[in-house]
Length: 296
Image (cartoon, rainbow, N blue to C red; front, side):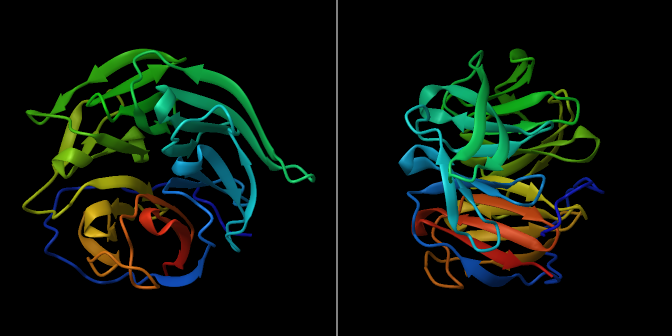
């Protein structure tokens, strides 16, 4: 069984992207059939037994075997519209950014039944303060963060109700804010895609760090993941790369050659990424596939 992430050990600090140790060289070990339509974010279940994929063009969430990348089941048929993000929380909770319906759908997810259907039950819907959401994450205290991509804002929710809204950071309005990752000490990392930067907030969405050009050559960064060592994996969509950073935010690895492509070394607008132990899953969005890498 694949090991899942348990604890994250370090927060990011701003240092130049020019320092690149080249320490992590992911190796492709598998890819799915092209059974998706613009797949967006991916998330490995806490058990390590299932990988869920926001299959945007098909308006469903698909459930995969994380090793073989075979589709086992799907859910959300007839109720989801252009889902962008999937994120696990506590107590088997799975959050889905139901973008086309301006809401966050919350499910309990327990895997797949013997008959091949998904064991996913819809239990809550969040709509307050939510407009075209494309990113969602749960903090350790149960607070939920949502990126209102179309509206250019982010919100923090408690029990489904907005407790804070942010529309600008570092003196700049947010532009197509995309994904959240909640790290150690409830540090909240946001890919502010339209501004080509990554922002780091505290749990109350007060800005702590701003990672942007010229130090970082991001081009529409999208979804984020962090492993148990504090290594950050970022889908940098229009650079057609997955960029990997250490705990001091020095680049230590890259997937993709920087040009739109296909095959083992080429990516085409990747958006989704998740990591567990030594394994990394990538949603190669415009090649309509999921890829599995070994990172060490």
